Image 1 (cartoon, rainbow, N blue to C red):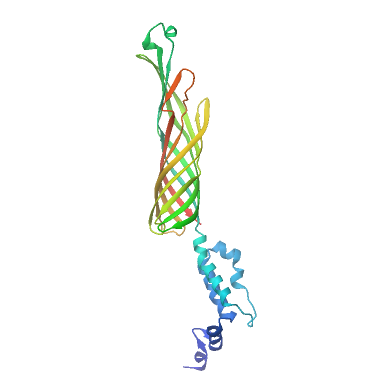
Image 2 (image 1 turned 180 degrees about the vertical axis):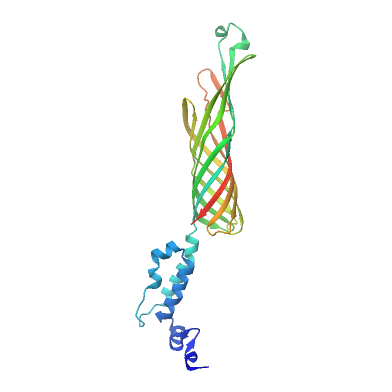
Length: 280
């Protein structure tokens, strides 16, 4: 072994290595170690922003305490966890809504004393349509295999066909076709299970606002949201795939008033879809 090799230990000068192992205060070897840790632990955007903490050069006689070294180590190894506390997802799928029936009972004198024609029914039915959902969620804490999030989903259906039919006794009136729209914003709580595995199921529940629109009118109402789905990990880091189903319980387009009674008084607007999830 030549003189050059005898003066080196694992690529570090023997004198520096002995000083590093003895007192953990020689900054030159520590600087190299933390530079590698920063580059490995930090995403490029984070490293570009705070990379100077890893590449700062101090004089050889500068010293770092063991306590500072421990704090910096915990910080570095915690960055990947902190950096993936957020989720941003976009889903495309189908939506459909349950129907409603408004029944109006007229006084006998108004319908020629013919009881069959004193009852007028209006029935609103809608077909399925396409809907889009964007969602941002933030990881709050974890307990065992479960992680808890808060989320802010926004879902919109640009238009689906809705038919309004009229019936009085045995007489069926004209069937009118409208374009129905819906928009929901329902901040929610989410529980995700086994988030470190390739397949992670989740459940969600929350409430907020709903906007239901028909040609010629619209209604703002409260909305309750509940549902669930499954997240799949992809080979691409920070990117996953989500399949989900959500039910939005809201007041319907038809409302009771006067002689009219609507049943049921609420509607279920169901969304089933999927799309990418970006974690950062």
